[in-house]
Amino acid sequence: MNNDRTGKMRTNDDGHGCHPNNNYPLKSIIVSELMTINAQRKAFSNAMENLAGCQLSSSLTNEQALAVAQMLSISEPWMTLKFSATALANYLTRDDAALRRYAVSVDGNLAGIICVRNPWLRGPYIELLGFFPDYRGKGIGKQVLAWAEAEARCEAKNLWVAASSFNHQALNFYQRLGFCPIGPIQGLVTPEYDEILLRKCLS
Image 1 (cartoon, rainbow, N blue to C red):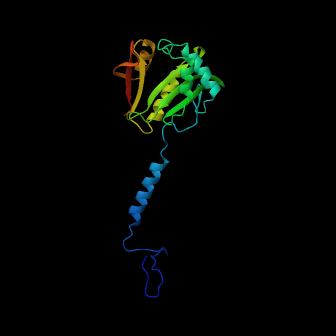
Image 2 (spheres, helix red, strand yellow):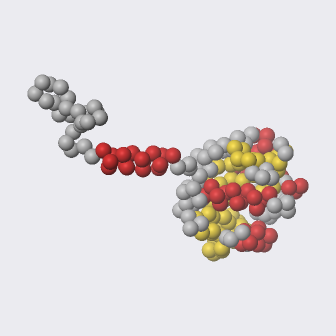
Image 3 (cartoon, helix red, strand yellow):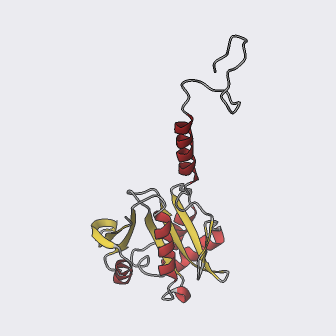
């Protein structure tokens, strides 16, 4: 700040301290841009999501994790891939800061799970998507996937998923929703089967 000869701070017309090198319009623009960046919501940052036909909660309890793990272990593709309920429960409850796990509920009843790894390869990766038998084929999976895509658009231009080469139902499901096969990953889970990596461009 500049002082005059009386030792008082020189002010501008509105009474605020001024400096000959200050550029207030430029500072205002920079501050505004920083506030906009800070205000932008990160993908998958909400703990709760209410969709039209279901609710998502990232507060997955141990009881819910065990129930989901037991269901998945006797469902495809996890049964063919020989994932045990114990292994799946450990996956659903272990510490992993990059993995967002959401319990999917319908009318208060546990319906399934979606797990999203973010960040991944210039976009989130849907690591797990599965539903209890009573909630399959009712459009819930499509709705949850649409939510995941909307979240990914907050900060990325890609959304990724993988499905086992023998899991034709899942491969057809993802491709109907705009995912394109990138190629096989040989022996990623078991030597007998490939995993097919699929990508959806969000640009």
